[in-house]
Length: 62
Image (cartoon, rainbow, N blue to C red):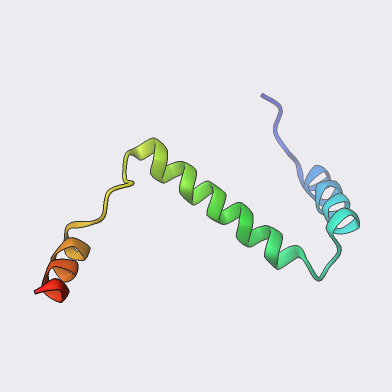
């Protein structure tokens, strides 16, 4: 698999800036981060609630 050097990264960044504009870069980055996080959780099988959250939800019910 080819490696990305600094010039390739700069070129990709320039293309992204041209397509989305400077103002939308934080939104795009956030969306990509959420997508990666969701993918990791789905692959890792961590889609259940953690045990601490279950205890808190049971306490608030009773």
